[in-house]
Length: 495
Ligand code: NAD
Image (tube, rainbow, N blue to C red; front, side, top):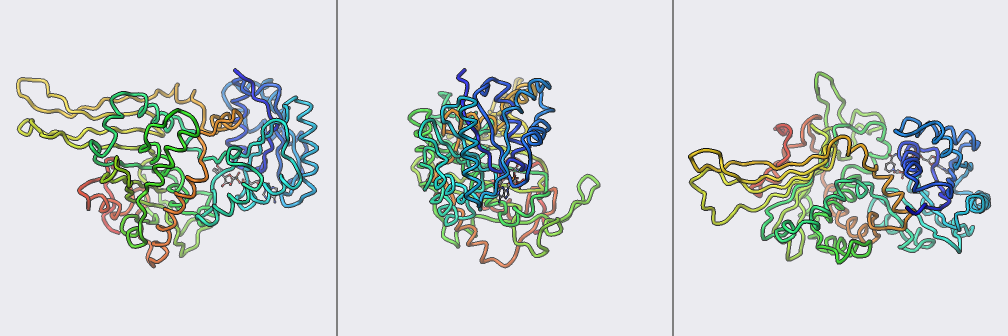
């Protein structure tokens, strides 16, 4: 294994993301030997912390991880340095540059720099421009920027942000995180599609009837109201995670398993997204907000009653929609997507329903159900395939059977976390699992029309917490003669 060498400069070193995700991910890379002696992390934030105090924070964030022996944790934490840094103050970048150079020499990293923006997005442009004006980028080694979502809140703001970071970094230096792309089962989707001879030939409108994607959460908005009120389910989940999943589900086989080829295949899908007019968007995408309900004997508040949410909030906590692709392979195949908070069961899953066999020679022998392939992304991780077999016995009766495979808990626990994988990818210079600007531009433009349609509607539909969303979500599919395959509960009957 090639040890990765870099000075990692983390903007937002005292933040929630850093503590919950990034320090544990870096520790796992250290534990695996991907990071060894030749790395240092400079955490920056506004607070006046010392290196010692920062190392205590880092230690606390990793100490309960498996394999975190005190010795290993101490060795890991010794690579962390802190700088009190106001991102709007040019002077602070001069100090940062000196510290980075000092650590570069001390740890022998050869000028490699990874800049990680784990801060509120309104600072991203400011940081990037200061990195340039204060000449932090090195001439030897690599300079890579890792940038968190949300990447803008519509096409215009995303473009402004992209222009500002592009003034400092080239596209091949920018690693835009969509942590879904680091998930095991999202990656497994590519293995399933392109690693098996028997799926690819049937993967088109000739054999596939419809595709359904569900990203269901049980939790409400929790402590994130400040952010969520400005985002809503459409921006928070559809523009990024759902769109990326859609691309992986429908893209053609890339010419190679490389970043360029995968991005080109995804771009083709996003280019083919059937554009909706505002009127079509309101017919094909519905939204709703959860209301108070009693779940397992406990009353949970409605969205508008949550801390930090406006009593007349028009932010949606649920989206269901139908997408279509203007590609010869996919014309006529509806792709139904939905996501929401306070739904019945936490689950991310995809179901591909195939067309019935034709002609059906078994019409007199029981129900010939369509084949269905389900990919369980989380929390369960695996696949199932519904096929028709024969009921054992004298009579010739069809019987619907399920072939299934689920990863056991041990393998799931051993698999790298999304952030671990993505940080290693960024350190290795592999952009395959990151989003390209063109993908963002296309998906924002698609989503902006839906937002525009909703902004013209005065009413916010609702659903009771603990259900799978409003009745309109079911009606959307019923209009096409379909239904949601994943139905952990009866859908609320009153809107
Ligand atoms: P946070 O509010 O917990 O942390 C923000 C950090 O920025 C802190 O370290 C703070 O000191 C620093 N900061 C704020 N203003 C500053 C200034 N003027 N100068 C220097 N430092 C300043 O935020 P977070 O939850 O860690 O999120 C960070 C980013 O990651 C956001 O873009 C967020 O949308 C994204 N994100 C977070 C999560 C998560 O699980 N927390 C998940 C996905 C994406």
